[in-house]
Amino acid sequence: MIELLELGYELCGTYRRGKAGEPTRYHADPLMTTRQLAQFLRMNPGMHGAKRAQRALSYIAKGAESPREAKCALLFGLPVALGGYGLGIPLMGYEVECTGEAYAIAETRMLRCDLFWPSARLAMEYQSRAFHEGELHRARDSRRVNALRAMGIDVVLVTDNELESLFACDTIAQSMLRVLGKRNRTCVRNARDRKLKLRRQLGLPLEPRRTFEAVGSPSHFGEE
Image 1: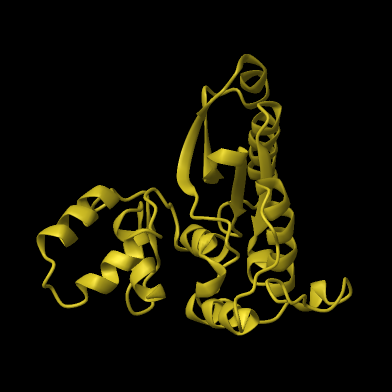
Image 2: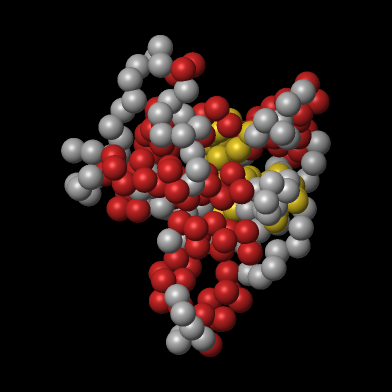
């Protein structure tokens, strides 16, 4: 189902994954909304794979701007039974209108949150190597994060290195669950195996990178 979910995020997002080694294209118009996708499935109940697609629909969010933003949403948002951390599927590309104080920091009227959990006013900013390198990008990111925090929004930053590290993702998820007021334990059997399977399906490494090994061994997040 993960391949189907990634396709759904792409259809409802603003990127197009390249084929046969071609680069991903960004800033594209969404091909459909989640509402249109749901309507299509209702009108074609006998279509091959329709039931599986209907089950997947509840985990698809519109507005992802990159494949890795979609991976973040699935990795952190899917239930533990499907290998995720159980935070719930976030809103993607959520726009927040700046207060006067936030405007003074960011110098813009609207700020975009890559991933946003509105019930806890919790945002995740994915900082890719491609689009967040260099002093100008770092200064812009700092202003945006500080402006969001000035409005009472908790912000979690996730880099490529952290997304590719099992241990780092475990640690980030634990801190986010505390903000969301959720438990970080579950009675789901084989939780670790499910988590490793999801990372494999998403094309993410299964073990932490060497830079995290000095901190401690990988945790067994989500296991009794």
